Image 1 (cartoon, rainbow, N blue to C red):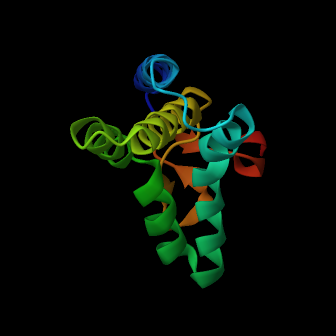
Image 2 (cartoon, one colour):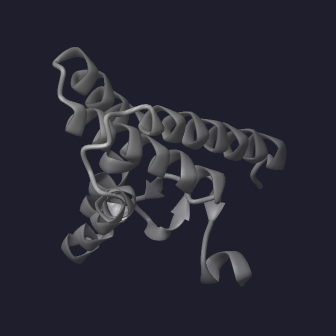
Length: 127
């Protein structure tokens, strides 16, 4: 049984990270047109395609692009090296990871796509 209080804390943390990252994005030079920014925001979800290579590799690939760290590193690199596109991509990537956590989509288990560190999702949750 998962501690619902801890899950709520992680969802709240995700919401705060999403909001902060979108605030950072809004302060960027806006290199990307809005339609491209929307695509970049949702692009990390394409990592689910790695599940065709198996549950374990799918979970590794999905988790790799959904941890806060990689979005943050991209954002900071963009800032340090004066690359506004990297700044924007990093902020949107970080926002996406926070958005997913806020909605209860956690990091994936090697047991399957629908088993996350925040609990089951999809049919497993309903069942």
